[in-house]
Image (cartoon, rainbow, N blue to C red):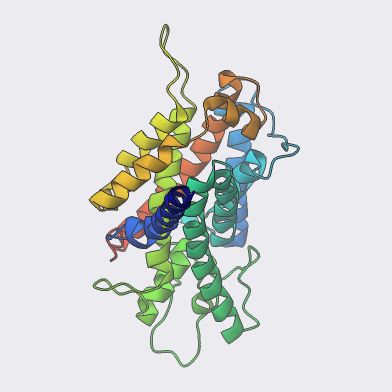
Length: 312
């Protein structure tokens, strides 16, 4: 009995260790106007939910999934609300997308659920920074109704040395680009050491988003004629090797691969997304992946333009 208890305790310690290192040292190097933004969002919603996508009658709007905590319909809605202007991403729907992705990961079992707790810690950092900025200027509007944050390439932007906060400063955490502008202007971002800046935190979430995008993309694939559908465990491991493994130590990579062994079988994902078979799963996940890709590409461009893809 004592041996069993020791073994169980060892497994628990490993799980907690894996979860904490996943983002702390894994996603790290150790383990134009409001109206224009609204029009852009409406265009994306129309593209993903109408016949414009393929020239025929478009797919139906995703319905809610009774009895499930994770809702693919909510995830898609948040993702479609995130793009703004020509090349920006609104942080409020971006973080809401992560809230839904966390529910998705939690549903996959305790191993992946522990990883999701680190995702929550990262989204909390950005939300706390936004809240702190709002407290500094209670009249600042940090929600989707803000008007004064301008997309890259326009005349307005953060101005250094002024006696008072510029509108962009007051709305620093409204979008990815406004956050980048203000944190660079304030000297919050450090290119040589670790800090809890919003930009550094966003980069960690950005890397994790690519992992999940590739996993869902592979899960949506149909079997080739005469072939078999690969297991979710195999697909998740492959997506991991192509993304997060590049930033993980040898030990973390081995522990992560052990975590994927416990991944549920494909039938579980049918129930999770409320579909009957692989064809229906593919239809839903393809739409989600396309929406993730739009958000990912915009974030990638903003980080790359500001030389932030390698923040320590």
